[in-house]
Length: 129
Image (cartoon, rainbow, N blue to C red; front, top):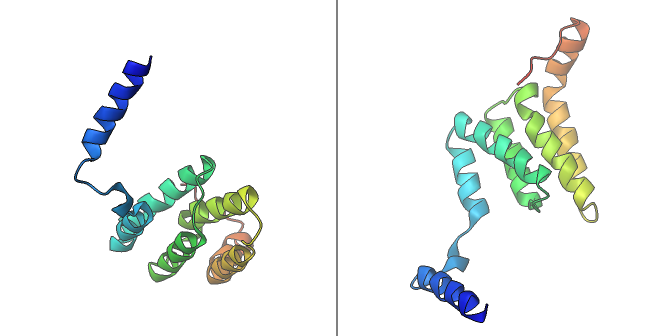
């Protein structure tokens, strides 16, 4: 057993030799993809929702940056849903100190209020994703 464990440690250590694993910033890479174009943002919003459902601790700054990108790209009500859903999951998982995320959700709703009102007034069903 100890021989197997030490072999596994040696293999993983040799894979990391010469490479500083702590230098990787996964959220930075994630936000770079989201910032490239609208397609990258859509993909990252889907990933964000999956991360939140998987109980990954998503930094508030990432959620806020994605919100600003949805504003910049003028993302629709339906396309914004993964961001709102993931944000509520983040607050549900760890609510202490995350009250500002409710303000972020309110600002998304404010930006999309005309579209939401139009859907409600016209009796339209929101398009699904």
